[in-house]
Amino acid sequence: MVGRPKLREERLDVPTIVDAALNIARKSLADLTMRSLSDELNVSVGALYKHVSGRDEVLALVVERVLEQAPRIDPDSGDGWLALRAQVLGVQDLMDRYPGLDDVVIAHSPKSPTANRMRREGIAALQREGLTVAQAHKVYRAVTWLWLGSRAALAGRPRRKADIDTFAEALDILIDGLRRQVGASELAVTSEEGSR
Amino acid sequence: MVGRPKLREERLDVPTIVDAALNIARKSLADLTMRSLSDELNVSVGALYKHVSGRDEVLALVVERVLEQAPRIDPDSGDGWLALRAQVLGVQDLMDRYPGLDDVVIAHSPKSPTANRMRREGIAALQREGLTVAQAHKVYRAVTWLWLGSRAALAGRPRRKADIDTFAEALDILIDGLRRQVGASELAVTSEEGSR
Image 1 (tube, rainbow over the protein chains, first blue to last red):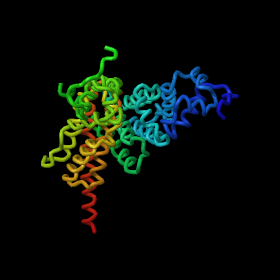
Image 2 (image 1 turned 90 degrees about the horizontal axis):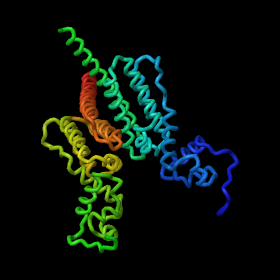
Image 3 (image 1 turned 135 degrees about the vertical axis):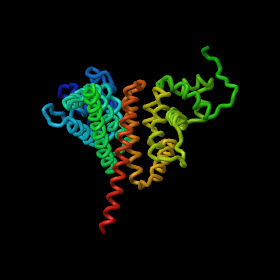
Image 4 (image 1 turned 60 degrees about the vertical axis):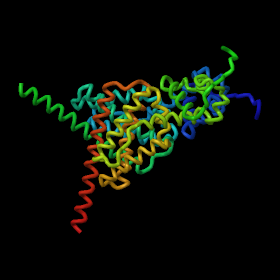
């Protein structure tokens, strides 16, 4: 097949490139190169570069594609704390479906538009529970650290039952404790106001 | 200076190489290459390869050098839970001294001998508090995730006051909650035994 001209009948576009990249990356991130991607799509490497600037952009797009599948927080949903808990557990389940993508999601999530949208939704849900912006950010930060760390610790291996159980328990402890702490600080503010 | 022969008077050894690597890496990890390292040490790249297998080994050795500076857990210390708390806060302070090394420490810590020694010491401290091996591993896992995630979220920037405060609060909530949970499960076992 050496020298066979690369010919693709269908039109190449970014969503098609991201589909192919995710197909390669879900098996092995190391296998995802501009060359392997061009082979998968049956196009020249040059044709790829007309749509994306390089492997880094492809990786960023793959992260968006994965995170877009995370469950949304319904603004009309009841308890904002439970909505946050569901969001985090949903992301964990989602990540479990893409073994090998932990590192790239961790690296990209601070600047990912989809991760930022999820953050805004999570913080809004907490504000609906009466938290100040600062309190909501604090809670979101702590909870995010727990899931980011739980993925970083895997170093590419799949989650085991002990990981899944510990995460669910630690998440509940953290959310309950933060909720109690926020409640106590509100109480403190109220009693300060009352004593004036 | 082109073509100047690289001559080093002192004997080259691995600790010297790691010193030089840490010097470069603490400023910018991207600047640490086998070439920049050979320049810093005033030796040829070939001379370096007689002591280390390449950049990956150098990075692993840098991580060991950093983590070795973390505070040890004194086996005779009082409260094992507080000892674990002190270990984690000590690692955070340590990491703050090496901006830019978060990613490489996160990547190497699952297989780092020093990180594993710290884990053994932390788990032993918890076992002295009456935890089973499984309980101690669970607690250590959850606490490790929180600090790993707090570093991963930085994406290379230094910690701000909000990061430091949130971490200390979240760590205390997690440790208190896990401690209460372990206490409750012991109570459950005792009352089960009592009811037989």
